[in-house]
Image 1: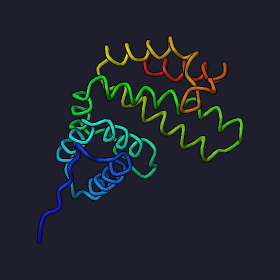
Image 2 (image 1 turned 30 degrees about the vertical axis):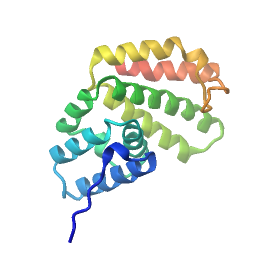
Image 3 (image 1 turned 135 degrees about the vertical axis):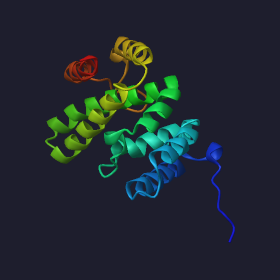
Image 4 (image 1 turned 90 degrees about the vertical axis):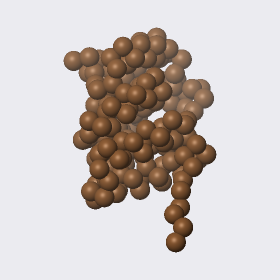
Length: 175
């Protein structure tokens, strides 16, 4: 039997999501140690697709508790990821916070709960990352908040209630 290897440098976004899901499942079933999982994730997040795919899965899957538990070995690897990790987590905090307001307005409690969970996970990660990098990225995005928005191309801007809530969520990190 030939061992199947994965070339993480050529992984698509969708593949990165699926790989992350598999690894997290194996970790939750105690088939992977914290350290082995952290090493694998560190390799995956070295690419843009890997970084996006890992966080897309780990932040949004309600049944994945990795980012709730944040094992030290993973925290260390995320810290090594530097600005790329900080940037994607801050952006996810901003987007999920804005979506909380959207789902609240639409009275969609399930989606609101999912967005709240993502937001809380983001805050938890940001609290353990390099404070200087986090502060720099937050200040940069707060200053650009009027130009950011709900749509992929930022054509639909955040409204005043969303911006105030985003700022509230960000200030939660500082406390």
